[in-house]
Image (cartoon, rainbow, N blue to C red; front, side, top):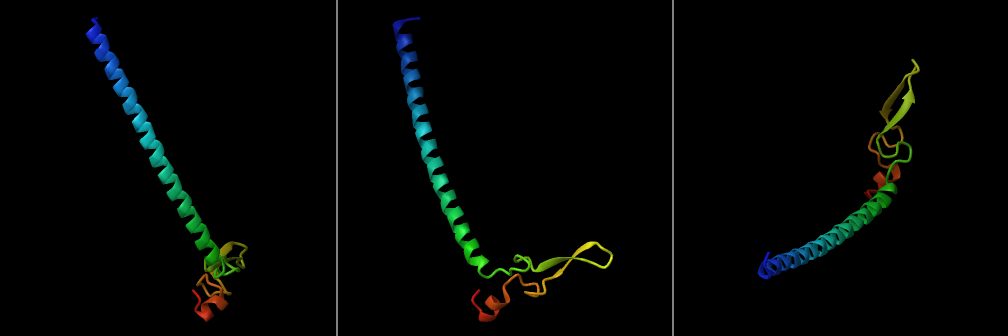
Amino acid sequence: MSILDISKLSSRLYTKKEMRTKIIAEYTQKLAEIDKEIAEEKEALTRIKEILSLYTCKACGGSGEERFIDAAGSRDSRKCGTCRGTGIEPEAGEEGCL
């Protein structure tokens, strides 16, 4: 192997190391951007849940259905008697706040 071959090999190695460093930096930046977006979306969902909890029927948890035991002793579900199946607190629905 000549000095010229060693020089070319060394140059290619240096170039590949630079490319690797650049790719890692880009990857790290993209991950940081994605992590920021995830945090923002989690915060938005938390706010939405907090607001919706003010209007969610407390009796059925917003499902619109309540569980009960029928005459035969089996579990069953029916329309919530408090919100009439809407999942919304009756007072909130009447005020038209939602």
